[in-house]
Image (tube, rainbow, N blue to C red; front, side, top):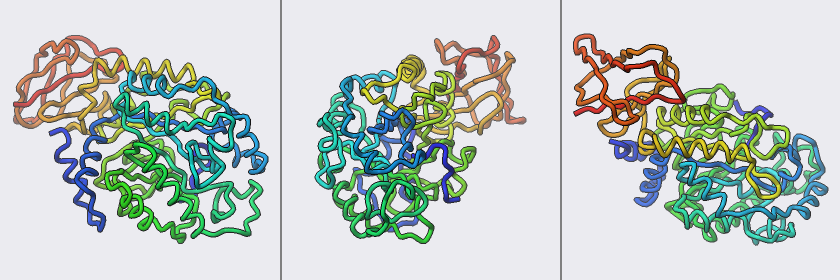
Length: 437
């Protein structure tokens, strides 16, 4: 995942599940794949983890590139990576308590280090560190035990392998550059894909790094995706390439932005397709991997409102944490997870299985919906009466807390619905429930 350096390339869900397959494409997803897609887009909240031995440096996941370190000297640091306090079960329980339904962890980031037991390389957690425990395997097992779906991030680019074609990044890591061979590198990635798909209960693969190469470069994605689906047809594939979906992909992601927005500058070419959507964002405001300097964590209020906004755009939220080198999650991250969990236990019905409501984002907030029920999420509103555009019939209008009935007036001619709130809304999110016949 890139954090500071700009990218170099410019019903509840039955209907959504069906329309996801209607793209003009050669790839035909299997029934189990479509089932996984439908479940994925109902879950709405996932936890992202950027973790590798780069956490020892405490400067984020891009330290090798940004500090222009020598790749061989950098690799020696892996010999000191021993996350003695790591507990897969504790992590996954914390994610589940926060209301998350799935998690995604970096199996291999741009520095080329694999956090799993890989026979395709010795630069992995089992061979290059004294820890010698399969991080990915332990997390996959813990997720199975807690009913959390397991996703894996995988970097398409590599700053340390000599056979990876040098392009936009990783030019100052000490590579000689005289052994570039994409056939060799492509076969290496295929070997690791087979390991990740057969050794672990992987529901989805989350690719990153496509943007490192020029537009003319042939990543052979069609071949790569067919290979993956040939091993595990039900596995979902997403690629953080900042483009419209490519044939063979099963969901579309947006980095640091809600679908349709481009405040971070990464989504200029990301036309929204018909696949399930996911946006990812950091819990700290700066880095993806652990940074000792980045304690500016987003508040519980900001994270909850971001989640609600994502759902109002038919998107999941994948919120990222960078674990420490000792295997613990930062205290601020645990605090935010606890706060989110408390809110989700009360208001999860307005999130899980929900999609966009009938209203686009308003000055007061957003709307979500599921079936014949629509939820108005009032973030900031300083009046006791709310009028919204509305067509159709109304069965009842309630304040979600306590399901207290609210007075309302439906004006069919003006096509408006006026709701008497009783008091000025306050708190993170005041939710109004509108039920249609």
